[in-house]
Length: 467
Image 1: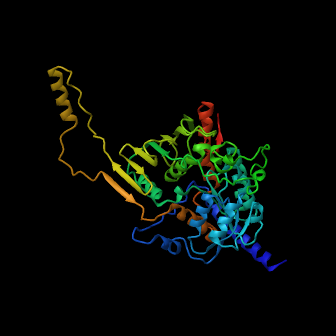
Image 2: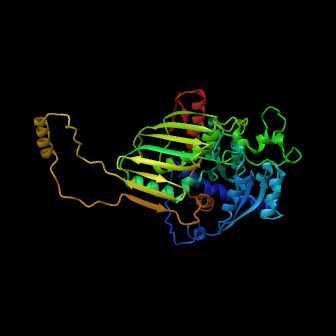
Image 3: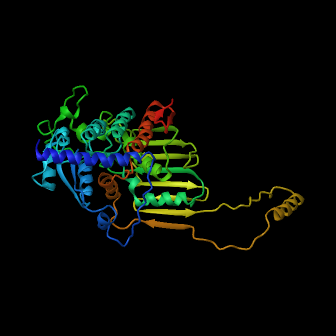
């Protein structure tokens, strides 16, 4: 047996051993490891001060080298003690771009299995189209590789069981790539809600609107794109044969064969962030409406979707209702925002800041006696004065507080920081397979409820549809 193989086996065992430590402690929907950061501190210092140094080099392999995958890898490599040794994509031009970016010595292939076979790959970033998520993630964990899997975790809910079983069996670190669960902004909201800053939560709303062709997934299609450069047959492995269609390859999010629609792609972020804030396992009732209103380009995915969700009372939160929206032809300019409303205020989450607005309802009821006779009005005024006596004036506290992330902050960077600590130190990951499925499932069921015009009952504890 070669020294190279021995070294690779040793590293696989290291990944497996620390991974079991993480899995064993990751049964909670979120592990509270809140970070203390300062707007005066350069963001890159977090690499050594918060996430640890390079005592154990972590070598990444990239599987799915489109703009999302290359972007993920670029952020991961900002951490100390990281490198990339391999990249896989079905389009050769993307592999050429990887070599141009990370060096001509980079191993590239159109077969992800060749990345998983390499001893110089410790962890993989999986950023393929959704229909490959479950297969590659399971194979990667079985090969002993730590996994960063782009959201949503699965294309279909029933694929989640295989990922859960494999994660439990192998014990390797596994994290879903919905970065809001690692954001200092969302951690601040979690703190505010737990401190009772808005009183008792009763309503949540969120939206992710867009107003551009790229925002609506009209990605660029190179004129030279063909099967000479793209492994179309492998892309559709397990599906009926179909002639090459560049639109379906480059704009895959639009099609049911490969993607999960706007709810699966975008609502999953909103579910992930909310579930982290509240330690929630998910909604119990799901309904939706929407349709194709603008982008009549042959896509399957609706471009306007509205979802309504009921959350039952749990040990970590009161009962509340939630409304989510996506509009891919939003003439107001688009944008994203999440709002949590309680009986004493609201919290609004934007891209780079959190705003807390506090309100207090008057303990005294109003007066609606104008339509009554004078004697009855006098009677009521006397009663009111006795029931609600005048008190001394009180100081008015500030009603609005704004918390901002430092300039240059990137929550994807922190998300990879958690994964690297899981690999090196065995701490629980922020978004494990169970958390990932509980975020993905209600997003996927939103499309089902919309298309079937039905209300779906979901058991977030057992992660099963009950109607």
